[in-house]
Image 1 (cartoon, rainbow, N blue to C red):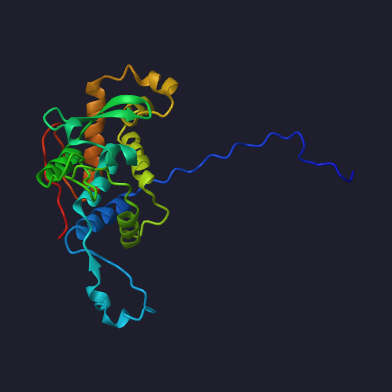
Image 2: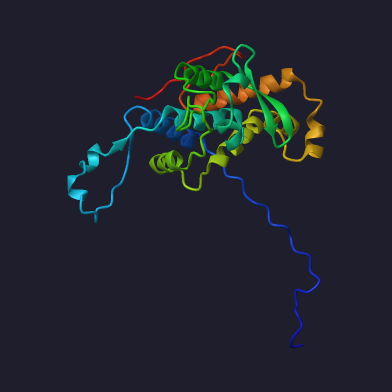
Length: 248
């Protein structure tokens, strides 16, 4: 009959979003790109219609070096599974390299400690050697009286994604990759949830029984797997700073 919806009363299946995460091959390309970005630089494009375009460098010489604070922020996002603001707002006073952790005072689920695997410790150790101010990821005003955290990683991330050919990959994909790696090496969702800090406090409460020993083992295993995929050491020891292999 005209005007009657034949689908009326039918219950629709809820669409589930597909979580994007990096493959082993993509992790390898990401590692190579980050290493190139902070050493020789990444290619950049110019506006060919600009009146001054003819005075620019030749295409093969158009390389821009990316700040090591930006490249290492990306590594920390991957190795810790933290959210972007949690890394950009991290202060040195909240980092304890001897105990292998740093503290988030204002995460989505309140105060929590982030356990550091060996690759993350290596990154923080390197950053400590070029420390400029109170924030781990130094911003433009690092070391000044009105120092503020870096606002974002938008520009360097666009360069990295393009050069590494990581279609459909966002910075949040690094968090998904951290979680997926944890599941892949045999740790259950409660352990992974405890490491990442669940958004809902009621859900996070279910993870309260996960002890530091299990969480530490999970963090170390995830770090080892990710570092191996990125060309670093496969074997990790909690609390030990092991240099990651970098392409030159």
